[in-house]
Image 1: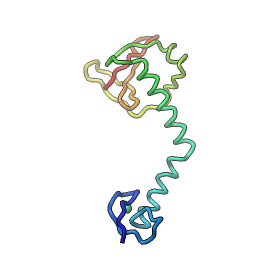
Image 2 (image 1 turned 90 degrees about the vertical axis):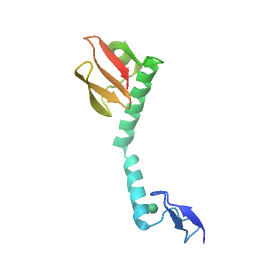
Image 3 (image 1 turned 180 degrees about the vertical axis):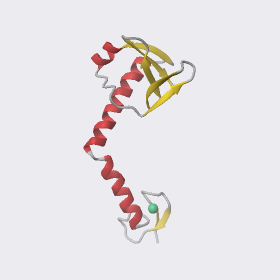
Length: 118
Ligand SMILES: [Zn+2]
């Protein structure tokens, strides 16, 4: 009997068929449900927006831990600013920032955002 690892829960199981990928029906349907969500247009679009905005912020930060950027420049680069992964209260400046993965940004003044690599 050949042993394989379940693609869903990663536990070892004895293969009953050569094309078997999951340890159980429960794992097979859990895996398929998760991927169905991943392929939904609204999920794909949100992920693309997040990744695009994140890439722009990382490019602007470069090797810096923090920097300023003109809001106009961000718009020119195609920054959407409509999706975030979370909000975070920055203790040292006593204000809320929006976060995309590990980059926080907030209105520094009318024309500029401040970016901070967390
Ligand atoms: Zn499993």
